[in-house]
Amino acid sequence: MNKVNILGVNVTKVNKKEALQYIEEFLSDFRQHIIFTPNPEMIVLAQKDKEFRNVLNHACLAIADGWGLILASRILKNPLPERISGIDFMIEIIRLAEKRGVGVYFLGGINGVAAKAALKIKNKFSNLKIAGANDGGKINEDGEGESDDETIDLINKARPEILFVAFGHPKQEKWIFKNLEILPSVKIAMGVGGAFDFLSGKTKRAPSILQRLALEWLWRLILEPKRIKRIFNAVFVFPWLVFKNKVKNLN
Image (tube, rainbow, N blue to C red; front, side):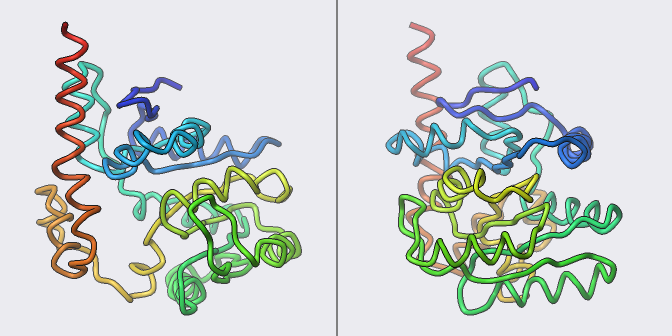
């Protein structure tokens, strides 16, 4: 796969159609595959957290979930084809899973949101095989949780082929990286951030016009003011780091 390196993080150079073709291939072979959805906020964090950066670069498929990455790739003269929304891509994977009769598992979130999201998805994709759903307990910044043994046991008993993990970054990426090999039935593990909140109806997505104008960050800020530091990193710190890196490489 062709990749674009943005501040040390590799992002796969694919459009949505090509990315879904890879999913088809992943489900047809005998290996395990990690899917991450890098965005500007995650790349800013990866500048300080070297373990996180290393984990991100172990992804089999790293889709560009953020307009900032598209703009950065153009500045680097190696443009990414398009932004691929993580939640939209997750839904496309679910559509494919229903078609192929593949079991999916929802892990993460709080207050039962994984089960609520699974129920909503089941209502939309009636033939989808949902292997299970649970919160997974509290996870620390190293991607480790007190309930990991129980969680691993539950997943292995359910034997899903696709695992969606929603602990938020960097927890979910580190958790997947550390535990995937002891989840032998799982062919695809994907970090999905706050997707369960959207799918369950707990949080509303930005209106389509704001999505097209790359202003989803403003919608999230209005709904969740406590995210201001994270949004500041994505909207202001990330472009500054890209610009600074570009100037440095010109000298």
